[in-house]
Length: 258
Ligand SMILES: NC(=O)c1ccc[n+]([C@@H]2O[C@H](COP(=O)([O-])OP(=O)(O)OC[C@H]3O[C@@H](n4cnc5c(N)ncnc54)[C@H](O)[C@@H]3O)[C@@H](O)[C@H]2O)c1
Image 1 (tube, rainbow, N blue to C red):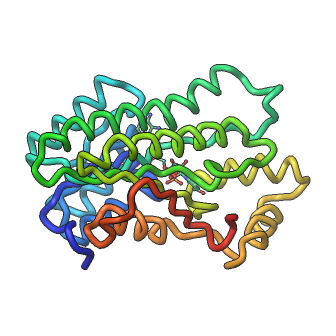
Image 2 (image 1 turned 120 degrees about the vertical axis):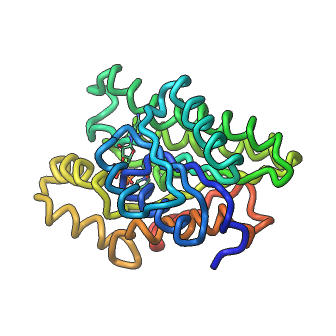
């Protein structure tokens, strides 16, 4: 068991998705109360039914300030504190060059990936500042938050923004006793990879199997990560096992980066 998770409360966004649901399962197995937030009510219901007690599923749009205030309030009303926050909800962008990218699609990617991270972390810090034990925050960025590839520039820009925000927030909250870190995965075998494979495959002239093989062979471990391998790192960063990890960007990339 990881120190400092059992009996505490975590809020996880994107909780019905691959990495988010794996994090909810891991924190729940470690004994946490978990507030699972997602826009996908069906996925949330399935997760809540699977895990039973100590899980509060809240359907919310993380791009909305009102919804963000609402799900943190529900967390405090139900479990009294918010000790851990995983700002994880995100969407992929279309795989097309910047010159052809639609401005509405740009705004949507930045709303879900960046605005939500701002809204959620600001709300979490306000709550944690008033708690004796303060708290920990982990953002899900991506290796795309550290390096760039053609065709995914808008997604890359959004994840660079998440890394920049997390690093700045860490400077602000270190003195308050609120630890802030980033997990930066490479390819993870979740729903999100399917449209990315389709787009990258089209650019490279490869079918789905061909682009999966090409992406995997570029990873020294030779395969995508599983969502629970990312969740293990998130749980570790949210625990009391690593009190000096602060402002770090922890890649989970099978050797892909740098
Ligand atoms: N899968 C990968 O290869 C990979 C790699 C690096 C980083 N990431 C990042 O990991 C995070 C999780 O992605 P995933 O792979 O689990 O994908 P996913 O699509 O399985 O999960 C994303 C979840 O976010 C939710 N979501 C989207 N918009 C929302 C909104 N407005 N309000 C509330 N919830 C919303 C979706 O409903 C979904 O359940 C994302 O931030 C993604 O950018 C993924």
